[in-house]
Image (cartoon, rainbow, N blue to C red; front, top):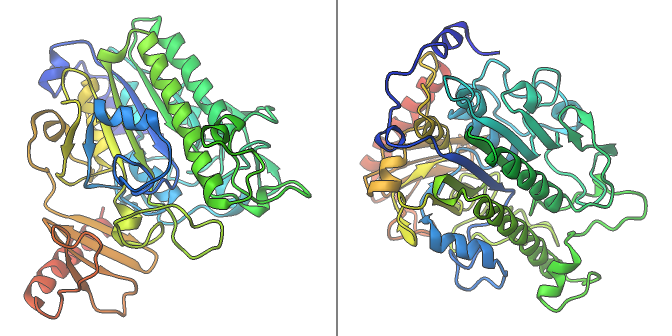
Length: 455
């Protein structure tokens, strides 16, 4: 439920739209695509040494601003999605850890009083049509499900990961059409979610109302033995078409090759969704944002932790750059320069603010938002609106300010210090030579922490 203050606020007639580009034209459609554990180094447009074939994502990069310093606000699936949809860091919205098991994924999850992007977009005189297709992972109890949190349509799964073909999570069938179970055994989940998004885009583009399509793919999340049927191997799953792109058979035994095929299948699906926007004549009036929810996992599990975050250090569930800095690109023809590369730091809570500004919707004024308006950076080349970025997950913590970053793996450890401009791989700890800088950044970290716990 929304707060009373916000509910009253959304009833007001908007006098201004908050952004000049929104004032000059009808509100754009918004297509928000997320990948699941896709590494910074998995894509050729970020890592030329990658062997993964992603022609559609590579093409999107040439049509977009490619962001090279974009951060997820948390290095794990559940929490990162809550941050994206609320525009708030975990310490404010309260969902600070991964939802675990059936009890966690089918529980309340994210506080139901939190205001999500689709709830904002459905306010005012021009409400958006809203759809979510894919991985939800922030709670599926009554009142927590997508169609109860601002989405008109939902096809996807409640949990953090499912079998791509049989849609099983921890022994339970986990695929839904709105709130009812959907039986689609044998349909590859990446294709299912893409097809659902395409149908939504085609249908909504035939009307005058703007639309918001949230497409959180579950690929390329690693396979989980708990999600397999008896006798089913626990291996990466891709379409025959994706294996054929490399000249491999669907029985390919090598885990890394299978992982490559999963990403190529994802790329094909993204290409089809983008083509549907073109076919609907909506390219010029659609804001497309694509990013990975967190970095690839690098926990040393054989056959599972094989994604690449090169040249970044470590990966998911850590506050090293490999867990937090993710591939991201933004396309908006005529407003965002195609083929540009933007190094200004931004992060996932900014997406909520961008959506509100694009749609000309008021932001809730009774909560603290950690997102800032990224549109001047994206459209005008402005400087980042952020002075610093705060990260804390389990025992890991970090803070970035300018080119400098402090990080530690446990509260009992001293802060390490890195200059990301000259040392992107975080390999040269400069803390002992710069004690005053460490103290200053640590003080900023403490200020963030104090602010978060009081809001």
